Image 1 (cartoon, rainbow, N blue to C red):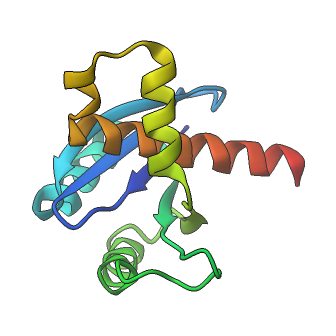
Image 2 (cartoon, rainbow, N blue to C red):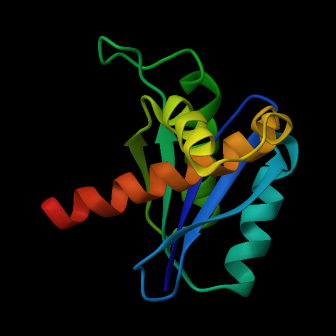
Length: 138
């Protein structure tokens, strides 16, 4: 079964998913946040998903950032709509910075680096990779 990760944004949301063996995190897509709930419900109806990991934006002092006022209701709706799939939050501090760095280091051109949808998808992949690594350590 797969793990689905969500980098929730005000306008766009990046998604990433593991392979069925949960060895590799891959970018899935970026969707308009207004379409996110429908997209996730459709995805889990087609693919076996064991867990959903949602990036939890935090400030440097560890407190939740302003986007949590949008993320919390979304997470609560997912938990009601998908009671058999655990939905958990995972600290996403620095994922955008890491996404930009990964794009630079991979040699992606300047125009592609300005593609915010690609940044969101890479950020979701970094969230998922971080969650996977935290499970290996724990």
